[in-house]
Length: 231
Image 1 (cartoon, rainbow, N blue to C red):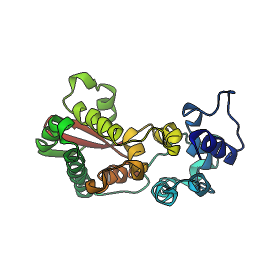
Image 2: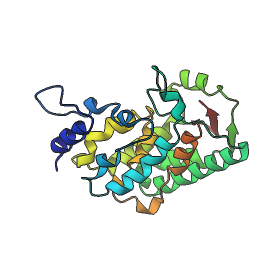
Image 3: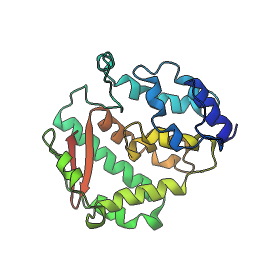
Image 4: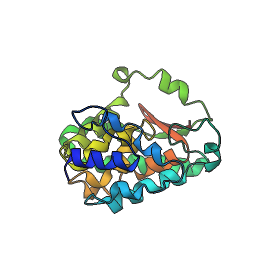
């Protein structure tokens, strides 16, 4: 099944057809997984035609399970998959932050030529700070990637993932659907991890990030520190 055939298939699951005669586009599938909110009923059919569909399904199931079903009872419902229903101690959040740093270092070690600066930035982190709720939002608002050393980590992760991605693969047509789950590329990378070839030795490096996301936390890297705060 090629990308267009698969695109028509996934649209048919929600009773839709392509917008244009040119076929299904990735942009057209933005927000696709929201069609199965809140409990993810029949979302397993999305993955049935895929080679490693069961693995992809296992990753996305917890994203539906983190939703509060009561938020979908009125006319206004959430447009994205927002975590944060469960509490966690500051110590647990810091442990996840440390595990994320270790995971990224394993990932960057798999592609050392383009990852040296990012790896040094991570190695120099000596503080993992958990912010009070709401305090991380202004940091995101004022973030200027070109002036922030921490942006090297984001850019390098994207480059490494791209280098191990087959853009002609059938599931590629769901790339915008994955991104739009939380408008978060890192969560998207985690959910699609089985498709990235040659990274088996990195041992699922973004799992701690996904755990933080499900708890409602975001991460910002700054020189010498990692900031973690509840959205």
